[in-house]
Image 1 (tube, rainbow, N blue to C red):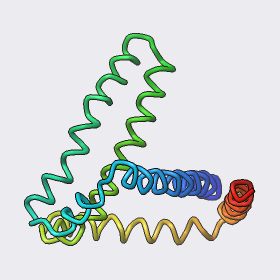
Image 2 (spheres, rainbow, N blue to C red):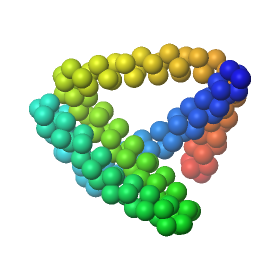
Image 3 (cartoon, rainbow, N blue to C red):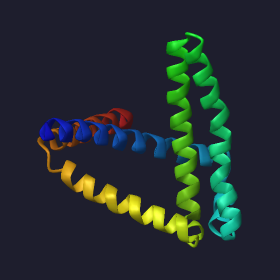
Image 4 (tube, helix red, strand yellow):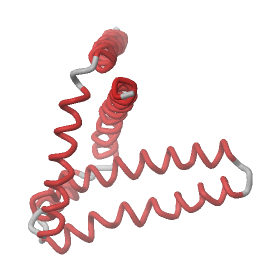
Amino acid sequence: MKKILFALLAIFLIIEEWLWDILNAIGHTLIRWLHLQRLERWLTQTSPSTALIAFLIPLLVVTPINLAAFWMLAHGLLLQGVLLEIGAKMIGTLLVARVFALTKPQLLTYRYINWLYTTITDWLRWAHQRIIETAVYRFSKRLKNEVKARFAAWFKH
């Protein structure tokens, strides 16, 4: 049972890494297209309270989308609801992660956020160490690298 759980977690982790790479690239592209470099520089220099507000804004933006997705699900629009929720999660992850990366030093001045961040990252580091030792993860990682190399070669031509 333990091997099955680790295999499933390894698959989840590799998918999450893939999505993270894609979302990160999309985020950087959007920053350039929307000319938000000045906003990003400003966020890195804000006060802790402004950083906290900036961190909460993406959550407030995504919440109505989540509610709409749940409304769709409750009214039998399963595919639409699931797709909207997946989109909301991706947008939310992109926005929250970007704002957190820019405001992390300010946010970590709050004792509770610092404790929460440290606790979660310590646990994730421990879990990641266990998962990367699995054969499924190593195979998935090789596959991911091959696919990335093929895409890079394809776009060069």
